[in-house]
Amino acid sequence: MRPEATLTLPSPVAGGVGPARATRLSGFTVTLTWTDESVGANQRNQPDQLGFTVMAPSGQNWTAPMSTSGTVNWKLDDTSKDYGAGAWTITVQGGNMGDVQPITGRPCLPLNLVCRPDTSNGWTLKMDWAW
Image (tube, rainbow, N blue to C red; front, side, top):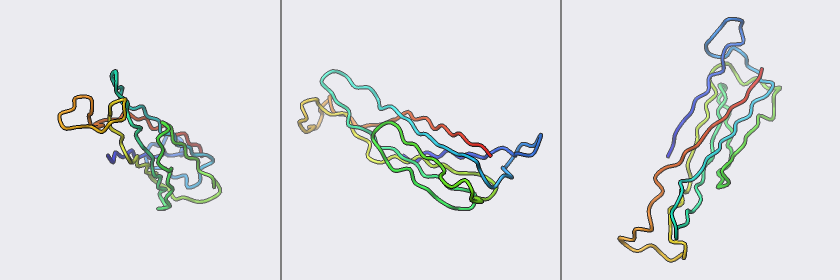
């Protein structure tokens, strides 16, 4: 699972739309949230692990570490730096995606209808920025 979301900041020039011309941001935060698929009776779902990377137009990279908590936050700490004009790229990354298992914790056997692989995950990426 390697979905990608790319953010291009709008131009700060009055009436302009297009790639950002601002090279310094006064704030930038990214929040990734997700929920795992639901399971039936006598089942438990092992947690899914997600995280993301952020790349500035200048090529500088940051990593928001993988987590199973359902939320990952990142904040641009140094707003005095020139990060270049253009697109900021956020890449959402999937790590260990836990499968559905019997609530007993017993291993899954072939043809066991309780056990099934984790095939999906709904996630949301929220970005707030200012220049």
